[in-house]
Image 1 (cartoon, chains in turn cyan, brown):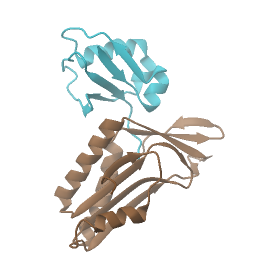
Image 2: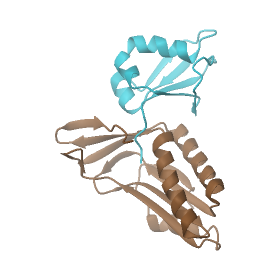
Image 3: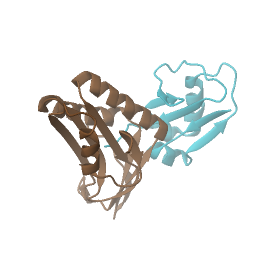
Image 4: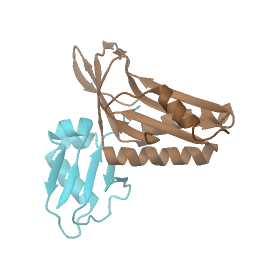
Amino acid sequence: MINVLFFGPVADRVGAAVLQLEHRQGWSVKDLRGELAQRYPEAFDIACFTAVDGAHVRDLGRTLDDGSEVAFMAKFSGG
Amino acid sequence: MHKAVRIQYEDFSTDDEIEALRATSKRIGGIGLFLGCARDFSEGREVSEIDFDAYDRMALSELSALRDEAIARFGLMGARIVHRVGTVTSGENIVLIVTGAEHRAAALDACRWIIDELKERVPIWKKEITPEGDSWVVPHP
């Protein structure tokens, strides 16, 4: 299982804060993003940062392990 | 004593954080402080409240890394960072950064560096609540 997290403006556009998807062997962050972007195009218009298991990920080719936690995030606006 | 880096719903005391910092070392000769507050006006609209959402565990990890980097980069004796989440009413505190160094320049430079980096690196988002409706804030450059 892969837990996908959304926060703030991205969560609003998805209409959920968490999605759970079955893990697929060899699935990459890019594959996951592509599938979700088709389902939630407005959310992924503003999702410019990605994290896996709580750490920034810049290599979207990274393969996802079963049990991974993936967050697709908009630009930050804290402070 | 509270931890040096925190994300919390409740308000914080600037006096308590300064005292906690001072207690870490008597070599501190200067303390820099940044206090971010909720404004009641933004982009031409009245703002009654701000709602903060955060990726808690990542935000805490990034804030801790920021503190460690600032201590190393500016030679600080210590630093504390507290950021609120949830609903913050106009006029209330949002974020506090206190930095302690032997001299003022390092303390002030570190404080400015931490708040600038926080805005770029820490996964927290704010939504302004106004009479005309709610809107997520688009970051300023």
